[in-house]
Image 1: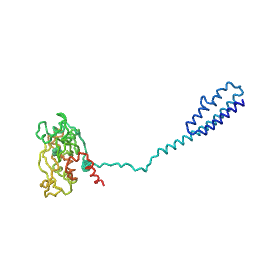
Image 2: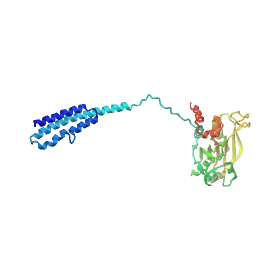
Image 3: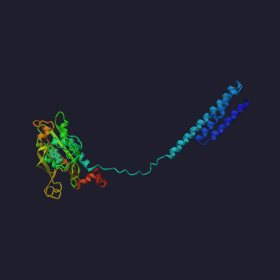
Length: 348
Ligand code: DAH
């Protein structure tokens, strides 16, 4: 019995010194397994209890448990010490040096066309208009037929088109949205909308791009007259291009308006005296417009005896070119940063 007891305290002393000399968590665990594991040296004393006299068992058992408890406390505090060391090592190793200069993020600038679109939208929203959108892949029906341009109509020749099938094409004009707005309005109540968006034609030179942008306007209500159209367009053109400009309404032809006008503005470069921009005429054409044709009202569910309306459409690219002095429309669609970044200045 004495022998057993001194064996236990010898094992404990050994274990304590091994725990103290462990230099990392792995070594510490090896010591735990060696003494306290299933086949550990202290555990095996407990296992051999059967060979002891019955009165010896509680004494020896007690001693072993005591030694085990003591060792467990030491091991636990050793584990904590190593875990803390490990955490400190990681924190040190993974520190981010926030003093390092960052790589410069280059901020883009707002596209000149988007600047124009936002300006136009703000203006018309302030006058009570809704901003609507329509599909760029449009049907022949909405792009032409419902605008009083049946199949085979000669005025279709004014718009070289990209047909996808005989019924679908890339819209040549945002005017398609006029028909969409009228058809979508089930109560056939008054309408006041603008629709800025992309349009497509088979054109490509310094003043024409196969993809370009227009804004369409449509107002339908009772007693809408040409005076309303003129007043609205004066506000629009003067706000966008210059407060003191004169407008000239020149009779023209569009299949969906009657009467129709092309609107010219006095040349904002030479003030009307004549220069290269206005081709010595003193005037620059900026808009197509007119009173909505009764056929168009009828075809899209409005009674022309009850309602009248006006419509207008203009190229946003032209507006941007005038406003920012851009000489080639294609620059607007080439995404060249050297061109686009020049508009940063307008934000400063
Ligand atoms: N859609 C015409 C075009 O692209 C422009 C236009 C003219 C629109 C007269 C209108 C309008 O709404 O009334 O050439």
